[in-house]
Image: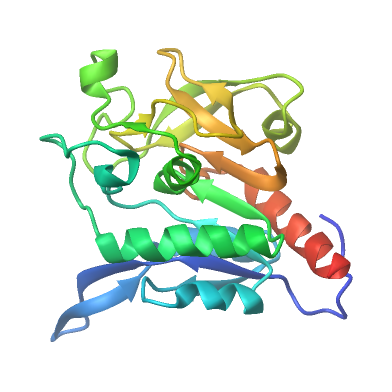
Length: 244
């Protein structure tokens, strides 16, 4: 990992957060803005400084104060954003989170910030460019390989396109990844290219052809032991800041 070029201040990495009811301590059970700790640890472990970005109106202006953006996993995107009616298994739709994350993505790209989309985050990237989603993968692939057990990130193999930016970042073209999702990319959006797939043909990574610092993966790298994606993000964040 390269040394900071900014006088020692770590790259500030904004991570989109959830709005959920949460319990903590002996008495508290309140609406909260929260994030699984694994994202924070992955960013910090790669040398970045994690900054939570809650799903509130106007949060897109926060990109002026960060050096990169992580679009985190979470509930399903409103199918109306890609011209579909909600299927029976579509769940966890939060219009406020949708609005904030689509706005954050647009603002981040407008400032030339590196972007890493994780699971839902990759789907946000695709839908933002006019792409569509499969709303329930077992109906498409005939099995549960992408989410085998509740709240468990089981692994499955992924093959990566040789010569792609994704392969360069990961340093290999075949790997096992921790996964937990029931939706996935269907039609690719404009300027979106698929760069990794599972054995059943589901897209596992995407790149933007016009944004070399934007990368999305369907799996959950924060739950595994490979820091390459977060190291890439932090290094790109430092480089982008030095160019501004």
